[in-house]
Length: 241
Image (cartoon, rainbow, N blue to C red; front, side, top):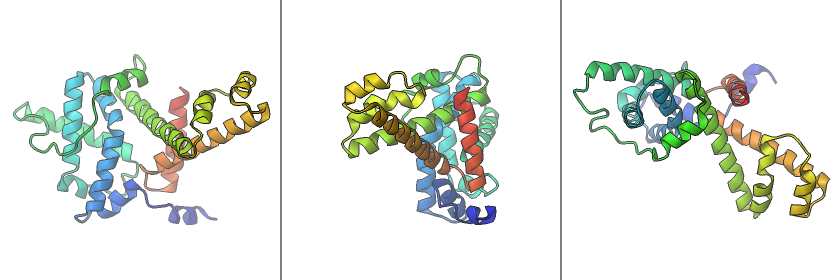
């Protein structure tokens, strides 16, 4: 199959739905963008905190920016050239900060347009857990993005096992997802009443499924197969640092 064929078969995603529908008034487009904004605001928060904004100000700025993004004029500005959602978000936030500075506090950020509810209660604790000391704003944004993707994939993996009545298997083996040593497989074998070989197979399947779920999450924020491959490389590079 040629690269062109693979690109043509790239499935519709939330971001590609937004891109295609943005030129006209579309509830589908808005709903897809709202969902993406709610999911991927933590990297924006991390960027703002690393840029020197205090927690309350960072929350306020994120709320105001994403609310404005959902306005009709901003949706119309979406273009296929902005193929990666996180790149589009960060560029838009930079522009929003410039606009806010020009207002010089004449109006509360976001004004009456705060129409997007974000769960920011644990924003600071999540930021502190994901961002290493000394990181610049851009690296903080990238790291929090990668952590958000991984967290969502892990939660999806947990829910899959819960639905299949295999929560105990997942909870017992989930620690193996972050380490490749098999030294403790004998202990896990005793805990689960499985052979060492069966433990190795189960861990292998968990890792493969997690990678599939990570890929599915990343696919929701890109517009092409080539962007997906690049974002996957970026994500694993960031997580390995």
